[in-house]
Amino acid sequence: MLQRRTWLGLALGLTLGPWPGESAHAAAVPDALTTLIPPPYQAQALTPEETPHFTRRKPYREGDHLVWEYRLVVTETKHPLADGTPYKVYAYGNRVPAPQLYARDGDRVRIRLVNETTVPHTIHSHGLYTPQRMDGATHVHLGPDGEMHQHDPAGAPLPVAPGEEFTYDYIARPSGSHFYHCHVSANEHMARGMIGTFVVFPKLPEPPADFDSVLLLQEWNSKYAKQGKPGDPREVGDADFFTFNGLSFPNTPLMQVKQGARVRIRFVNAGAQPHFMHLHGHTFLVTHKDGFPLREPMLMDTVAVGPAERVDIFFIANNPGDWPLHCHSPPHTTNAGVYPGGMMAHLIVGPDRYPKSGEGPLGPGIEAATDAWRDYARRYYASLAKAAR
Image (cartoon, rainbow, N blue to C red; front, side, top):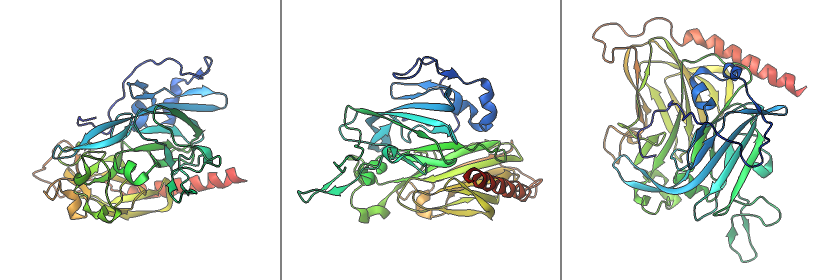
């Protein structure tokens, strides 16, 4: 958790036994499944992983559904800010951000949540059509004592208490870039790291990408690092550290791609402030908003991503060299006011980081891909209309 991690690292290849309650006759999924998952995610999504605090099983067939099964243990630990300050956090899988989860549209998801902390927690799968009992939201109500309570005693689902566990079980839909977070005392628990991304792959193949990465946007107020609590809502603008996937520049990994590579980046804003994502040297196509493809993709070089929003961009890396990708709110590219830092990463296109010659872009740019994404959106919504008949 405290080490610098790449965004597209391979998972551990371990063989796992059946979980309690799992059928011993659950059918293994053939290797042909890889044809249904975009290549940049195949190793991550399909390779089993098991640690003391996180388990990802290889998908398996159960009846009419493919099943994606996970175990997340919530711990109390510390996450280092860019200056080394340890921030007291709650952590799904003992990681900040939480492990990235995957499924396909229409497949079954099972997430076993084990609470090893001293307070209740839940999982809210933001953007997914879960049954109400699997929504993970606490039903706050005013009790007869005049105090606010975190759950409604009249049959509403309860948070997972310390020392307890619960399995969230639902069909993954719709497809898109989503995220999950704790919905108990959300202002505190989200600010303390209880957030992870969730990619649901569509049934309908999308235009391919050679590089596909998720960037989780968060901000941190070091004033509250020791106790973890985020403080008064009026201090929402007082954050002094800003992160991509839990890391601030210069610790954000480089994104290195070949000249002409098709690049997709999925921004997920898990914080309380809007961020304005800008890429140097290229124009990108905004293809998705909150997981849904845009009927008319938009050409931009800066896109606003508000709290809880997901925005996917796609571009052709046709301009050689080293290009910053950053939030264009200047304070957000600092570490406690010291520039450079915060929400900044570098995209390196081609083998030469600092070309000594050339006139910029080479070959076709994003305009060549616009028609493909427009056609995909048309087919996507046509398939939804057909399914609704």
